[in-house]
Amino acid sequence: MLCALSHVLVAQDLIKPISGKSFFTEIKSVEKGIVTYQNGPRIETMPLSEVALIEYSETGVEYFNKSSLNTIDPKDIVEPVYKKGNKVYIPFSSHSVQQRSGALHFRELITKDGLWEVVDCEEEAHFILEFYYDGEGRDSGTFRLKDRNGNIFFRSDMVIERISDPVRQGEKMAESLFDDIDEIIEDLNYLNYRETLSTVSARKRGFLIRPEVSVAYTPNPDWNINPSVTFANQVSPHIALGAGVDLAYGFNSKSTTVSLFGNIRTYFGDKPTGLFFDAKFGAGLSNCNSDYYVTINKVNYAPLFPLVKLSLGLQSKLVDISVSGLYRGMFDKSLGVSLNVAYNIQFGKKK
Image 1: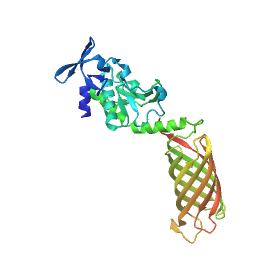
Image 2: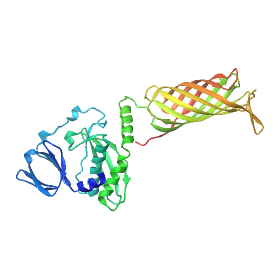
Image 3: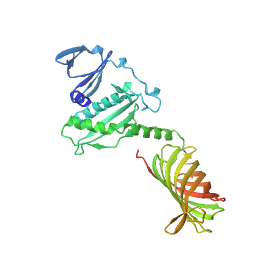
Image 4: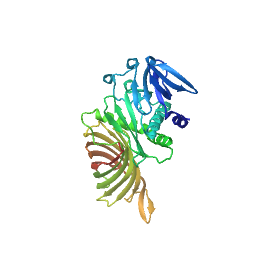
């Protein structure tokens, strides 16, 4: 139904009366203080004294009674301007059919979704969403978000749709771009949070790999070297969740332990240098001497060798230095301490 409606509206103009709802129509003429327009099979007229504005399908907005608008002063707009329920203006006037249909379809999709309230002019909006069609051999569509002062605070990625019907082509681009709206708002919220801080951390929300090297001491098996790697997702500015593989080699016992673990990390603040708490919980196999073991290829391994490692550390940009208390094994003397150095390799979400 939305697509059928867009096909009808794409060649029409919008009239916003001083009172009552705005409506799309085909304007026949505007002269002598009268606007003449098509209303179904009938031709009707309206005095321009009753019209707030008209947005023509190709030439843009013309104001007739601007003082009747429910204007919002840019100085009264509170950040973030794109928060749910705010008012957005989506201009649709263009000589390009694809651009008009894409913008109009955006109006319909956002109205149906209820994310923002769509209004009919910039003066009544908290911000502006502008859809663009590039027909110079690219058949691509993008949109950008602007505040009321004309500053662009977001540009979308480009989508490409090659469809012979120009109306449907614009609509498909709008649909593809709209599918990412929730993720875009989530990213903008995160960026807005970070930009309110006087200094911004190097962390990005998204996937990361954290190789770590530790030197540990446990009474059994004495000193050991402990490399590990964590695969994590920075789900918020303060929380990272992940899992990884831990390898420990005991110098005195000549033992090797391989463990799988889950990991949660909490950051205290979002500055380039700050404290964090890290917890790893897992289990694995070791070839150390034990009264409890399983035999694999004639080698004895302690079964379900538990691992608990709790760390308090300092992150400076992407480098971590931390001290840990750890429990590794099923022996009387399995508690220990370690010094750890790690580096965060980020594959953060594209902004």
